Amino acid sequence: MAVRAVERDSLVVQCSAELSRLIKQGEWPVGARIPNEQELARLLGVGRSTSREAVRSLIASGQLSSRQGSGTFVVSATPVSALDRQIRQSDIGDVTEVRLLLEVEASRLAAHRRTRADLDEIKRALTARQLASNTTDLIEADLRFHAAIVAATHNSVLVMLYDSFGGTLRDTAEEIFSSHDHWSEATVRRDEKAHADLYAAIDRGDPRAAALVARRVMMCTVPGVSTR
Image (cartoon, rainbow, N blue to C red; front, side, top):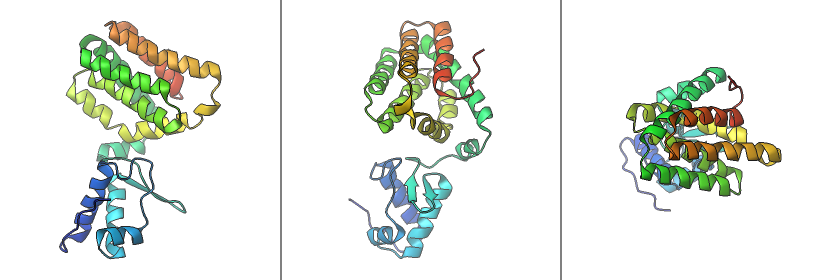
């Protein structure tokens, strides 16, 4: 592990930055448990109190989450915005309604504006989703699929808004797909077909169909989405 030495001034700030760098570079991926404060102190060459405060700083920024009795885990590869943290604390019904608006409109715009490169990225994510052999890979591929559709809108504000839901989207996906192995065969087929149909609608440039299928995708995977 390549850990950079830190200077003695502003140790907590520098340790926080170093831990954040390691997380961003994938040393500890999302979902991984980081070493305890004693091990972190050894790696960084500082006292335990400094490593403890650095971890607290990253918990406050939304990159880490402490679970009593289990340890501290990575929940985001980058610091989480104040908006994302606020969204996580919001009513799930409100979050679902706003996400539905974003997903449907993003799919409609993507069908208008997608480039060949956009379609290739959406297709790669769809294929990875279909080939996922475990829950972790399925979640990553699903998030990548929907993010690729939003990117295909070429609307920087929409992309920014969607990114602000990053933590909540991951939390929701983990909750939904944690029971994926116990889904009925019909549910799995319906979910896979809805995602494939969404790609097809965007590929052929059919905004109306893309918006309709996007709602169907949400109905398959997100609890509480209206069928209207």
